[in-house]
Amino acid sequence: MTPKLTLLFVAIIYVLLTTNLWSKNGIKFMTLSELVEYNLKLYLIKNAGLVYMYKTGSRLLETLTSDPILIKMHRRLHKKYGSIVLTYIITKSRNYYILDPSLAKSILKDSPYLFSAGDIKEEFFKSVMPYNLGISKCTSKQSCPWKKRRVFNEEVLGTNSINPFFYCIPDIISKNITKPLLNIKDFKEAAFKIVSDTVYGKDGKNVDILKQFIPEVNKTSDLTKTPFYKEYLQQLSKDYRDPPRCSLLHYAKLYQNSSWEVTKDQVPHWFAPLTFIISFLIPNLLCVLLNFKNVYSRVREEISKKEFDIFSKSTYLHYCVVEHIRLFNTININIQRTVDKDMLYHGFQFKKGDQLFLLFSSILRNEKEFNNPDEYRPSRWENRTEKEQDIVFGVGPQQCPSRQISPIYYKVVLLDLLRNYEYKEAKPILNDRNLYFIDPYQISFSIK
Image 1 (cartoon, rainbow, N blue to C red):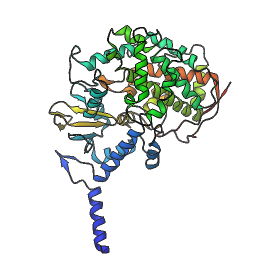
Image 2: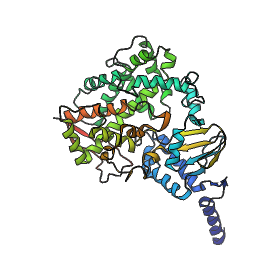
Image 3: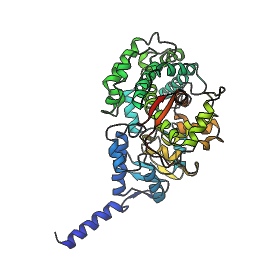
Image 4: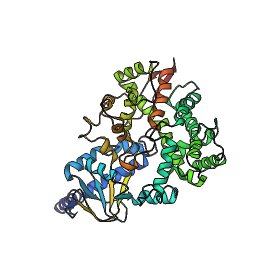
């Protein structure tokens, strides 16, 4: 090929990659280069699991991008295309990527009344948790599996009030963080015991099964299909009829006289997030606290007071937790909705079956709602109501039912660690409060 033809060929490829060649109803498609970048990042983030830097393959994500939560690319596309852009993900329907955080928030508020579960999520629920259909296409509480399961989860997890089980949490934590900790790996072993006690309520039972969590979850993105998880459910079912009082199984029986087949579909909603919270997110927050000395000092001063209330949502420690959940949210990329009927919505004409993809972190890092949105700043919550704090657990009827119990686990574990241990070092050293990516597994402890 002559130099001129080579140059022409390169020019054509460049134009194809970087030019908007298609549009539909006035909405543009991403360029080919943007489609490649977007789907590559989605793939890498999916393989990194719920929390980044946690699974095999996530190092590739760190190598290829400084944007592990997709927020930088999202903002770039928002500036270029406005509220919405057509994209391509492997589904049978037309796919829209919602770029305007306010529009995304409205869509979540209107689910499941105008939008149901996305095709990918619905297929997952039907194949893995048939009794828990996610966002069902129904409005009646009596005929709606989603609403029934939602009420069940909310009652067990104490979504709307302090559940009696919450008073078990300090005992579960103190009972299982007994071995002197030298580093974060020692804490992981305690974390497995805490999760086992929380769900199962049996001292030490199934800990060996739970220890398989890390290697197994590295092999698959589907926790429920791992051999250890199936074995764990098998063990749980044996004691389902007479569960210990301090266990979620006990409260499942207390609030719903239902079959084990129904209850076991809720276990992933308790088990997986709780394991990530205790074994990853709490050490992650601890790393943040240890890096920012003024934040750490204020927390230490607050928890040293006898009147400190672990259940209060008006403490600085609680604000530290909410701010961390805002920045490192486990509900991020995988929010997908299906349009239930032809409609004109906020000026956009959608067809029944269209797929809408939302980036939840765009809502939590919305510059219009949060000043310096990428900065870790717990004090931003001091003048916000409890209802405003709940945004970190989602928007609308599908808001995470763990919004009461998760912060309490954060605070009880941190309280135990901060009161009983000194810290030799915490790596990496964070020079900036704008946080996107943290590997906290270099914390070393010493007993006071």
